[in-house]
Length: 168
Image 1: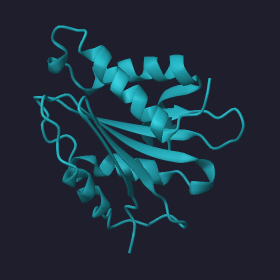
Image 2: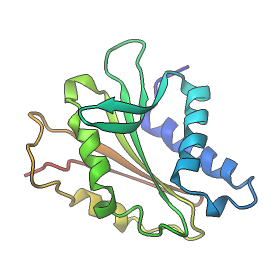
Image 3: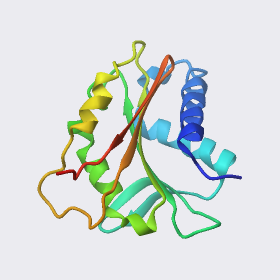
């Protein structure tokens, strides 16, 4: 069992998309279905997974406890399906970004916003660049700069951008 890294999370997400296609009507499934599939895969591959981890009046989709340190990995999931075609836009995921940056930087090793795309045609990389321009605005920013790894996964594409939602 190992620690989740960006590369390993990308591989896991691609495998989850591949597994989902084994089901005849997977394009009709919603985020909660992919949530369960991803949790099972991550737990089997890496261990230490917690689902709907409670922190400061909110819940993060996944948290991987660390055996070596007290700094876990946090993962929020968003899924683009035919019924939720706009689900991967930055405006739709501000709440997820806020949850990821709430935990102090000293208590979390890495934060991921994982964007799974189940539609036939991938989105362009420009969608991820809009995350770079996202500013969570109002509210108290964390004391230290906090970045979120935003990862987009489609069966034919994989993009990544580092997002600092409280940049000045």
